[in-house]
Image (cartoon, rainbow, N blue to C red; front, side):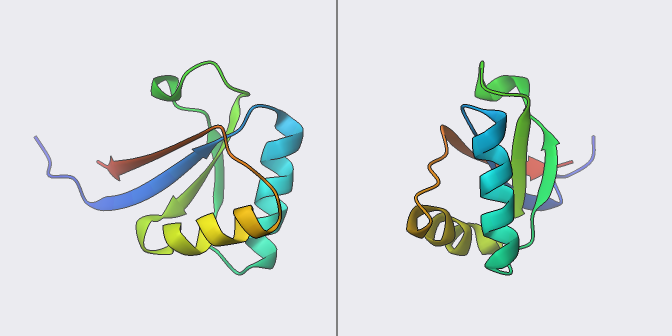
Length: 80
C-alpha cells in the first residue's frame, strides 16, 4: 500500500453555476484550482467540484467568502 502523498481541499457546490462562479473566483484570486468530478463521499451535490492544494485552502476560503460564493461542502483529502 502506498503512503498518501499530497493533501488537498475539495469544495462541493449545490449547482453547476455556483461551481463555475467559484472556479472563476479562485482563478482571479490566483488560487491554484482544478475542476474535478464531485467525489461520492461529499453527497448529492452537482457533479462539479473544485480541488485546491491544502496550503492554499485558507486563501480559497477567503476568496470564495469575499465573493459571496458559498460552497455546500468542504473536505480535506489525501491524494494517493
